[in-house]
Image (cartoon, rainbow, N blue to C red; front, side):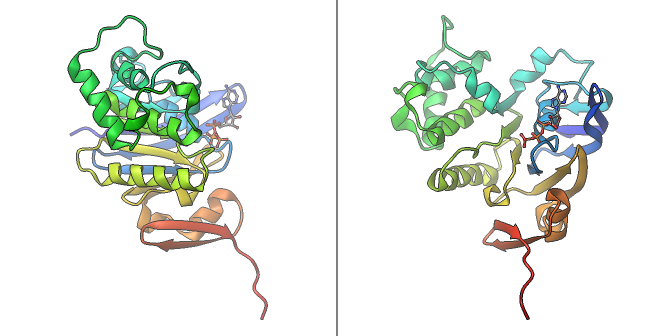
Length: 265
Ligand SMILES: Nc1ncnc2c1ncn2[C@@H]1O[C@H](COP(=O)(O)OP(=O)(O)OP(=O)(O)O)[C@@H](O)[C@H]1O
């Protein structure tokens, strides 16, 4: 069985900037990854490769068994569920929530004249139930809170029954309650054996949903550490990733981090 994502020495350059530097990384079907790193580390760039939205400058990138550069990305992309701020900006504010979700099956943003059958509508409804917002089905996207919009986007990303689910900072901009609700939803998805391989980008260890299995830590386009969360998510690796000494705590599968302070005595 081919890996879902397989990057070998992938480098991305834009002018003089090296956005990713010789990144090698493999994601298997049953894995749920978190990508952690500071601003500008290259997290979104890495996700763009995984989403077949960008090609490596050098190195080899395979997604769902297809090599980027040798595959028609328009056939590959519908197999991938993606949420990102860039995509959210393209959703028309007057669009009904149910249509935001169902229109993913055509890969379009903004419903026009496509015909959807009962199965599509049924699936969209089930997904809204799954992410806890079925009561919002008839609201327009523009009237939703930020947290509600994030949930709509997760439902939309799942609509195509993706083989790979990519979530770029889904908790950004959420208040504490909104973040906790989203972490619960993502945790539920992570524990579901029928869920696709998942990659979640975040700045914060507090946002790692229980059930996620692996972490990749990036700094300045390079991998600091990658592997099973319980082995890899250490204070030392986190400190090296964010460039400061950090203390890290874990309880019931949730994590907290803060700057290490010198204690008196
Ligand atoms: N087209 C481009 N040309 C030059 N530099 C770029 C280009 N696109 C991105 N970069 C730079 O590449 C680096 C990595 O960007 P990327 O968006 O992947 O980081 P990130 O880890 O997702 O950051 P953030 O947490 O701030 O969203 C940044 O320093 C960014 O300024």
